[in-house]
Image 1 (tube, rainbow, N blue to C red):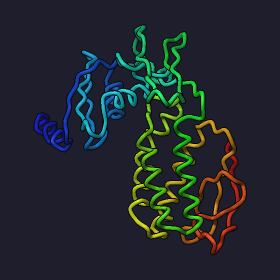
Image 2 (image 1 turned 180 degrees about the vertical axis):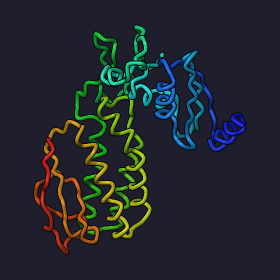
Image 3 (image 1 turned 90 degrees about the vertical axis):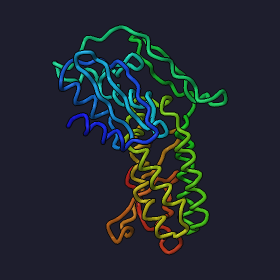
Length: 278
């Protein structure tokens, strides 16, 4: 029965690739956390053995890869031979799960390209890999594309909004997660699928109402991200009480002056700044 269930689950994953890697841990609680963190429905399955410390990774090679799976597991507190868990994540593990950590040199993070020098890899005294941004970083292009989309909605221009959402989607897809800081990475892993989904919906239509409906959710996810990104200039989180059938809706802006993306010229100045993010 177990074998048949396993075959059934694996059959739901397309473009299957299976690899075996070592992930450090101690007990059944570790197994539950490692597998839950690594698993993504219809995309990835992790099967970890507490005795051998070996994990079988089965995944859709067109949707994810070994590195992404191991990074998620590392962020939950578990080392592999490829990625070290942050000390903070390891220290939060229950006492029975705090395995003996072996000294090892983490894999260096390579720049996305020769032209992209927004991140620099540094190995600190604890052999942990950290990122120092020498510029605002690649997430700046994501926010810039978002602001252009917002401006198109302010103008009530469905055609332009569709094009700007396509550009935003391209920037989202271009993000190299391995160059993000730990805080950025943790938020990005949580929201990137929804960022893509709402950008795709806006790009696939010129119906301004439909675009604005998805822009509400997109803006809330972008707000989660901007909170952990070091911005060179203030960003304003603004609120319109009339939008969303009177329930209200938010958006991000580079300027404190209100220019409402949900009503455009009908109620251009309706709203207020509720948070300044620096």
